[in-house]
Image 1: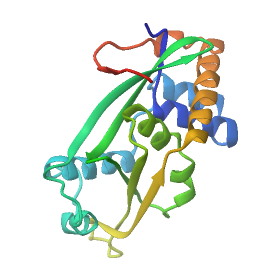
Image 2: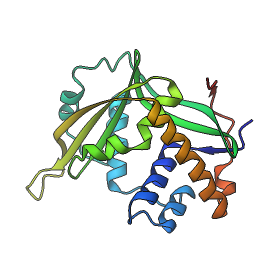
Image 3: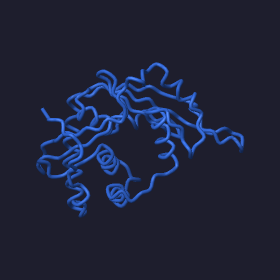
Image 4: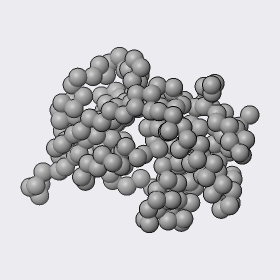
Length: 214
């Protein structure tokens, strides 16, 4: 039985806490406590995800959906499994840790992740992310592909439509070195939470189906 839980989002935030100056202790704690409301870029990304998932149009954002269709044109979204939740237990020095993950899409033996940004596309950020490494491990699918979309509004003041102006396809393959990093980050993350009185926020959940770890 799992003693605590962790997520790819938390583990990536913890990695940024270790490796950057802008992810402070206060900011990391706030993320774990879910105290930070989503900003406009996050809400825009959610709207794009929802359109890819089921064709829903946003009531909050004016989006050029044809520009998204162009990015996804080579994929069979109609037969893809969307927003699939999974969980797998990892044995650590703190006992079994429940690792919960969400796959944006699975088609055959390939995982897919949709990413949006209103700034510059930085491929290194996605390559270094814990998100895809943990997701690949949870679902036991080593191949993952990012579809990254840069969205911009028109230059005219009255043009509020968000349009994909640039996109990148980033294929990645999981390997054993990623498992070493996952173990290191999970142990460090749990230690951080216990030292900062966050134990109540990392209790395991029952509503996700566990995948038996090999």
